[in-house]
Structure formats: C-alpha cells, structure tokens
Length: 341
Image (cartoon, rainbow, N blue to C red; front, side, top):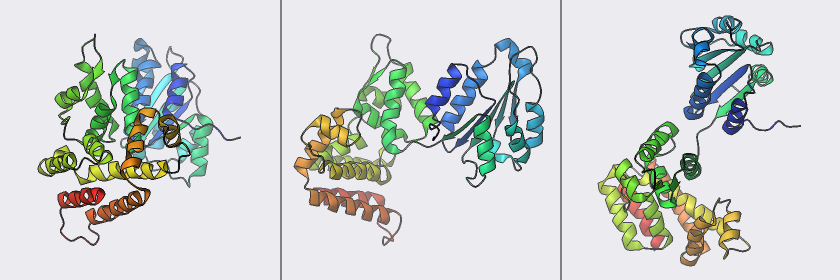
C-alpha cells in the first residue's frame, strides 16, 4: 500500500499535535517551506529555558557528517528532547555516517536537515529509504504560476483578510513565485489594513506594492478576453515604456494559460454553465469560469489553436530562435495584433 504524500500541511499538522519524529530531512528548490518547518521546530519544541543546553544550530559547510552524528547522539539535559538543526545540509560531502545514523536514530533527538536549492540524488535509494524509515523526507517544490493565486488567497484568509481576484492577480504577476518575497509583500499589505475593514483592493495593492491598478497583466488579460483592442494596446504601450510594470516574459505564460484552458473549455459537455465549466477546468470557484464563457463567444476553436501556435512561435523568438534582433516589446505587439485579427 502506497504511503500518503508528505506535504507541508501534513508535516505541520503532526508537529502541532506534538507527534515528533527523530529526523526531518527538508529538501527542495523552494526555501520558504523549509524555513517554515525548521523555524517552527526551533521555536516550539523546547521551552525557552530548555534551549540553552538542548538546541544547537550547525552549518553543513562547517561540519562533516560524523560531527553531526556525534552531536545527534548526545542526550538532552533536563529536557525530553534536544533539537539539532543543520542548515546548508547540501554542502555535506559524505553522507555515509548519517545514513547509518538514520537507521538507528536517537529518539530523544530531533534532527532537522535543511537541504536547499536541490535534493538528494534519486539513485541513493538506501539513504532515501533510511530517512523515510527514521522520520520525515519532505521535498519543498516551487509553486507553478497558476498556483500562486490560490496561495495568496489562502495566506490572506489565514490572517483574517479578504482579497478580490483582481488584487490577487496583480500581486501574483508583480511578485512572481519567490514565496519569501511574496509573503513579505503580503505582510506589508496586511500591516496597513485597518482592524475594522480587512479587505485588500486594487487601490491598496497599487499604494503598498507599487503595481498600477489600470496597467497590469490582469487588465491585459481582461482586454484579451473581451476583445477590447484599444485597452490592450494602451496596456502594451505602457509595458513597453515601463518594463518593470510588465513585459513579454510575464505576458506569455498568462496568455498561454488562458487560451490553453479556453481550448479545454470547448470540450466541456455543459460549457454554458459556470459551475460545470469551473469543475471541468479544475477551478476552485465558478467566478473565473465567466472569462471562458466570454472567450468562447469571442474566439472560435480554430482561432484559439492558431493563437496557441503563435504564442509558441513568439516564445521561441523571445529566446533568439529565428529572431536575431526583434525586441521583446515588438514581439508583444505582434502577439496582441495576431490575437485580435
């Protein structure tokens, strides 16, 4: 029987229930979740008066595996546990002593290995299995662009704040998938919200994060959905003159994702129903399905296929393929012109 996937939520649920494991190996390309787990353990497992003698932080660039094992085999002093956090674990060269330790870990030690910007080679089956048997092997993966709106909405909801879809998309497009930076910007927005009205609006996003509420990727997508040529060209011109506000590399994934889903929408058996279409496209809310119902009125299936092909062509050109010198701004204009004609 396959074991359930190890997720950030499942790890945190066990920790908060104080069901601790002897080993936590946290690895992956997204440092945000690695830091969140390690910080929770550092701040919550031991009482403040226990930490001086029972909590240690080591760095993989300063110690070897044998030294980590020696530290892990110590007994706690006047405490149920000792916590040993190893940062920069990716710099440890020879893991053999640790692999042996993982097979017989100290139950009174909580060893947290923070392996950022990568993961253990999948060929090292023995090491991976030893970690799984000893405790938790968690891979922290980068969020995909399409997952950012859901992350932003959940983050705000957990902090008792409401945020509308346009504000969500403005933040996602402006900040991107660097979760440490993204949560920092969200916290900046939250700090300024009055206690009696914790709603985040485009106006607030514009003031706190510096994203124009009128000239952004969300508004450009809206112009494309509704075939508003004048609005789209104004935004493209603004992007061309203000590269930091947006550009081709932010536009392509947004437009591709929309038309890819629009193509799928044509195959929905009840495509005129927002609820059915939202479920068909795997959307969390029927609200967003309206754009696809509008899109099916404004673009034929054949045109959608042609636009998807054009996006791939523009993407290749933006990377220098069959395009020695056309600047990104001109490629952006070319794509918008093709989309509407």
